[in-house]
Image 1 (cartoon, rainbow, N blue to C red):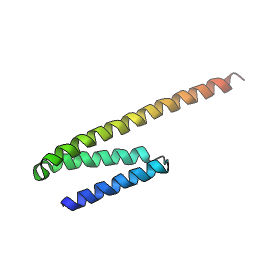
Image 2: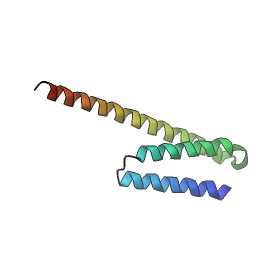
Image 3: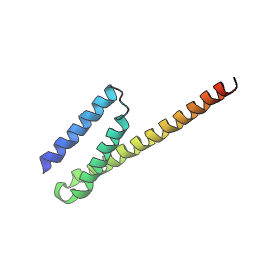
Image 4: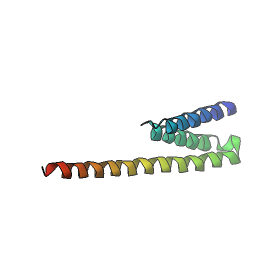
Length: 92
């Protein structure tokens, strides 16, 4: 079991890095899934892996928080951009 979650965590990390490089729309989703997976590892395996569980848990919380905040800020920027375009083209 120990090797499986490390392998899956590594695959998620590589996938997120590739999506960042290729500037995909699903990058934040993959980063969010990576954070959720780390939280799950840290919470459910806290007795079997010891100190590493808290590292997984808190790193997952940070990653999820950053991904959620980034998505929220990007949404606000998109809404403001749409409002600017509507104001520019509604005056004509």
